[in-house]
Length: 199
Ligand code: GLU
Image 1: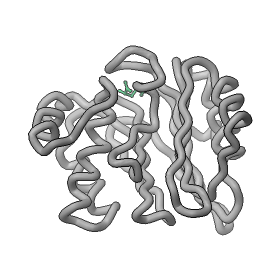
Image 2: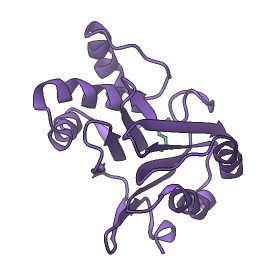
Image 3: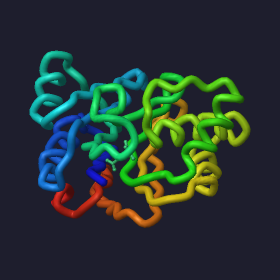
């Protein structure tokens, strides 16, 4: 189980997310990724295998900025360490999720989603959560309610953070059996797997 960082601010959060990931490196990981909603509320994602430094280089090569975003260091439990298994995972382009932990009933949820027409691009248990949230959004039309409906279906341990183009001013968090801390600032708020990333 590895690291999550999230930030929502009036300034570019990419440097904050990257600094948070660097401070979580001590926990160990095999890949890293970031997703931000940029000025036009379009979701942009970058993922790399290996060190956070590689992700930093990818960001320098492809300038990325936004006022709301989530980032992750992954310790693979379901699916090999690879770029396509790295987080954040996306459903239908506009919704992104980072997750620490293990979803034990991911296979039955995946089967249900396949019947509903969802296509999977990774072998992770996490991608199942992204598509479940997207699925619940069709009925709930509210990201918080859709995440709440999704977590009521999950068995296992998780800390997760979700952003969506449909609600570009919110990060939704949920946790069960995995730590996550929230940092409240002045006009900006943060989330991380541990205090080291917030200090
Ligand atoms: N189970 C998830 C995966 O394999 C999350 C692993 C983690 O906590 O980093 O992608």
